[in-house]
Amino acid sequence: MALRRLPAALSAAATAATAAVAAAVLVTALAAPAAVSVADVWAEPYTVPGAAPTPAPLLVTQDGRALAFPASDRSPAAPAGAVTEILPLDLATGAPNGAIRGLGLASVQAVAYSRDHYVLAGSTLDARGTISDRSHVQVGYGTGGGDIGPLKGIAGSTGRHAFALAANDDGVIAIVIGNTTERRLLIRRPNGRGFVQAFSAKVGSQGRGATVAVGAKGDVLMAWENAHHIYARHVGPSGSVGAVHHVGDGVQSHLQAAVEAGGRLLIAWVSQRVDEGEAASPATVSFVTAAPGKAFNKARTLESVGPTGAGRYVSDPAVRLVTGGASLIAWTGYDAASSHYVVRVAQIDGGRLGPAQTVSSAAVNAVLGDLAVEDGGGAALVWRTGVAGADADGSGMQTIGFARRETPAMAFGASETVTAASTAAAGSTSPGWSFPFSPRVALQPRTGAALVEIGIFAGTSSRFSIAARREP
Image 1 (tube, one colour):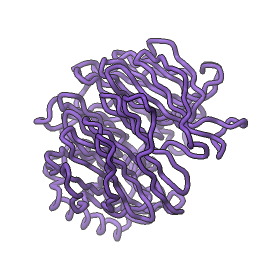
Image 2 (image 1 turned 30 degrees about the horizontal axis):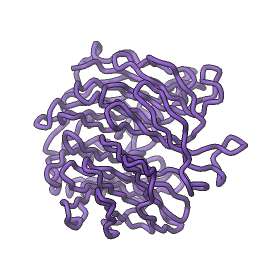
Image 3 (image 1 turned 135 degrees about the vertical axis):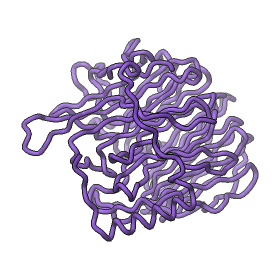
């Protein structure tokens, strides 16, 4: 494998940063287990005709029915006029197992709720077929079989788009919409009133992302970035709106939020200044929490990922925070000893982080793809190898890696290769394959069967594929 050598100054900085993290979070406490042969565990990825390779919502309902919502590549194989497709999926094979429906919304987000239901949100298109200031946000409600009712517009959403969407099992749904000057939190409770604005927040020219989470009791947590600061606000189950909290600082942050069943609030983010594809500062992973009814603690720095330069920023999602049968955080880190990016995960108990486990091999570069947890606390992680932060590392091989654990008391097991791709070598006439986008994973809530979504570039063509891991 060809390794990209870092300048000595950067290597020294990375070594110092990693040493500090090891003392604070015990990053080195749990090393990655050896990989295992799993040829009979993963089904051959199924390529969906007419679907674009970009990341798309992937979910499994509580009743165990799976759906994906990829963008359409508008080829003859796609439903007529479709911008987004609704794909019911077979958990055993990853192949569509029902009618593929076309949807006239772009930039779609979707989440499951209430046993066998899902809600989606996206932007309408203008007469030119693009998102513009004349577009507005629409939502739709469907079932695990892929059926969907009529789309409904959100009042006052013209010129805005959906930043985040979340729901709980009782059907409390929260959406953040906004434009260049504001973020609005809207909540729909199962009382027939539809979406009601909880609050709005003004943002300036340096306002960035926003995210939202819904707790089991119906309380809602929104986090957003503005002027290089991270803010949070909580809405109680009765609709009471709490104060705005400045929970930390960040720039161009990847934001995550979660609300535990007991009401504890969790926020994580990765901050990194990126200019025209060049990492101008290290990626800093931060985490903050608040006990029910209490103020947020001081934010903790979990790791400073040292390498900078062209293509060395940490690619999206950078960090994932999930709760359910257990609470977990995963992020892209850096192993200074091997000069490789790695994927780490830690469990959260009572707001305290356990020892971080490095789930990917330090022998190759790896960046986080996705994290999912099931009802019993079992969990799964996916990542890409052969990627040094954002760009391919020149090793000539990329893979989609996977690891899972069966219970909260267990560490993640040995890494599994979902699929591999041989990239084009220098001077080769072969078109090569690559995985340019982050994979996503969804778990059957009770059995642990997994689906992994993969976007592929293959020469001049592209593919959207689903790989299935049979029930353990």
